[in-house]
Image 1 (cartoon, rainbow, N blue to C red):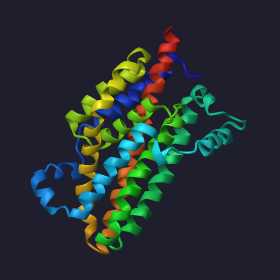
Image 2 (cartoon, one colour; image 1 turned 30 degrees about the horizontal axis):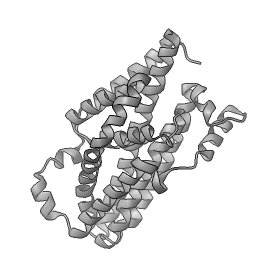
Image 3 (cartoon, rainbow, N blue to C red; image 1 turned 90 degrees about the horizontal axis):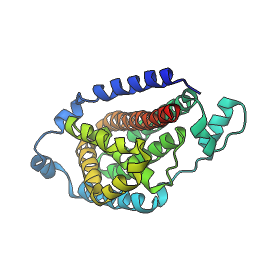
Length: 266
């Protein structure tokens, strides 16, 4: 297990990453165009798909729906690294290096899958875009669940599903939004606050989903052009999953570090 000094060093690396998130990517800057204009440009079918995505997210927070993952494969990855059998409950006690290795492997494989998915659904422009949106949302949710398991957390827990939705929001929010989310998620490092404060936020979680789907919806406008949509789809999907996975990795790793520091100090 890591020493307190090693944990503090790892925490500093995450805090540097958090500071770097203050600079908006080009697509986010472009997304600050008036939403009235974007609304007029967005086809009705795309609006309907985003509405369907909101309904599916509602189901995910409440019950997990069809998005809950099987953890066996992730557990087997840890067993391969350790050279011995590992249970899901034991992952929380493993070194951070092992957690990072599994998380990085998952990030690389899922972003590659998203690239080819975006390219294939970008071939037909408007005709295949309807397939791409729910697939990308589903993959985003599953990637974040995999990050949760990689750092020893259970996505079957309703509180963890809310944390995952917040991670999704963070990955596409502006500077002010990201700072607010970091403050909210800080409650997860304090078990006394987690059960009360975070469950109270369930009442306002729809705002999270609307923000996410709005951001994703306008980006998908670039895929409406047949053939050219292949390049936009591959790039946007890969970038989306890379950002989502990186966010999940950093925020879950931060929680694990803070919990271990609390244990070392007690």
